[in-house]
Amino acid sequence: NAGVMQNPRHLVRRRGQEARLRCSPMKGHSHVYWYRQLPEEGLKFMVYLQKENIIDESGMPKERFSAEFPKEGPSILRIQQVVRGDSAAYFCASSPLLGINSPLHFGNGTRLTVT
Amino acid sequence: EDKVVQSPLSLVVHEGDTVTLNCSYEVTNFRSLLWYKQEKKAPTFLFMLTSSGIEKKSGRLSSILDKKELSSILNITATQTGDSAIYLCAVEFGTSGSRLTFGEGTQLTVNP
Image (tube, rainbow over all chains, first blue to last red; front, side, top):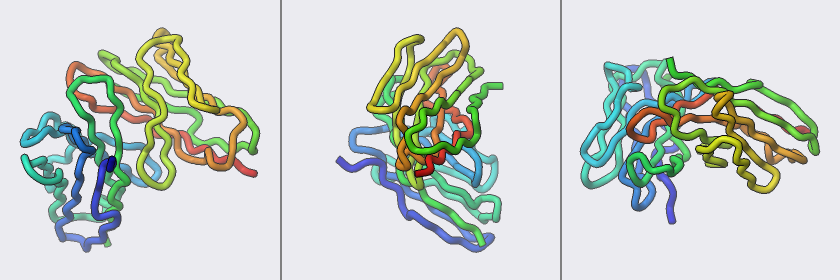
């Protein structure tokens, strides 16, 4: 029973390049969440998606960041024209149903380093 | 503004000590409070608390929620070096979805 799978584990990008982070939720989970953890800080909510729908993107920066969860395939967090301040660990979590008292399960994260 | 505050931010103890970690919150439409343990990778789920006064236990770890005081504690007895980690408190609130707001975490170091 595979957990939440994220790849790549580590990603290095130069300033101005694009970063694509992938997340496959646990089997049977249709809700995906992205969180960012900056060095020495807690996890900050970014976006909450269901298949083909963005439910809550209130934590997403207004520019350069986008997320999708297509009908087929993993959820993608895309960061365009990366800057040094984007360096962080990006965690994906999934849950089965909306509003059910079920804890989020996290993936191992993608550590993005912008040089 | 909704917030979750943990204390202390860091704690250093010796093996065998008992520790108590604190989490307080100010949110609208509280639904549940969760504790996670984070080592180098994914936060791993420890407890989910929804009702006041009911202690949840798992081995040497236990946690309880006090809705009147808007807080929770996480206790670890007979600490071991393997307990060294960041302990994250998160609160689920609002009227839809399972969005969590996390505290800054408590960095626990257990020395042999």
